[in-house]
Image (cartoon, rainbow, N blue to C red; front, side, top):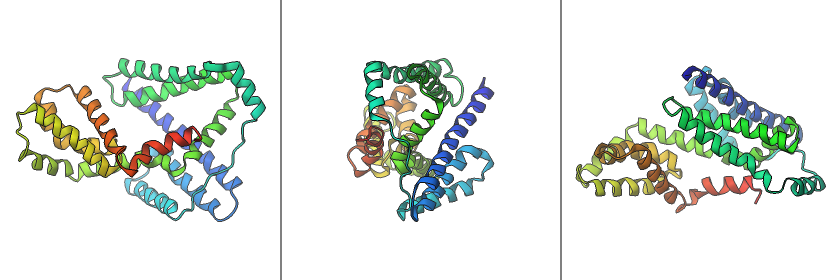
Amino acid sequence: MQAFIDVSLNVFYVLMGLLMLYMAYKAFTTIQGVKRIGTTVFWILIALPFILGALIPAWLIGLFVVLSSLLTLSKQVTFGKYKSLDETFGQKQSKLLKNKIFIPSFILAFVAVGIAMALGNYANSSLFAIGVSSLVSLLFALIMTKAKATESVEDGARLFDSMGPVAILPQLLVALGALFTTAGVGEVISQAITGVVPADNRLLGVVAYVLGMVIFTMIMGNAFAAFSVITAGIGIPFVLSQGANPVIAGALALTAGYCGTLMTPMAANFNIVPAALLEM
């Protein structure tokens, strides 16, 4: 089963990469002016790691990240043009489907939770669950709306493109958190906390864990980026070692981290993406 999960994840990543290549194609064919090349190259650089995965050396993926960041910094990335929904057709479908349009969203959530719980003992089971539930939800949506698969590709690319470079911000910040953990930042934090918080005091350990997540998330701009560092430095030695449930402690720590994100300008990480998805 583990082998099947690993292969399936690679398939999901390839599908995501192909969608980004389609976005690169749309950028090249619909954008006028100097930003056409920059936008096309940007989405190609993002797509290649998803498609080729482990075949690409780590240093080359790092180079892709730097180049894509430079393209964004120099304002060479803009939005492609996609087919817009016919307003009359949209109103007709809205009256026909009504609240049933939300069913695929519920299917995605419940199927993902069910698969993740059933395969909880396998590595990357949660990622596998999200991938499978997304496909099941998409299939149900296509059957319910009688839409063509090509329309889902077009509209999916349009929504993703509407977020632009911000869409990859969470992944980059998580990678930064992993880099900090590898560099031993967590150990430094642990040594600093040891002199303040008694190792056998559960309450102070929890307080340090929660506040550490809030503060470090404010610094990093992303709770997931801070999670690995603070959990290694404070969570494991001061909370989990006292017998805390890792699932519950981790969920509460991430919740504290989200509070930290929303206290900084980096809350754009959470605010811009949903706003772009909802076209607000």
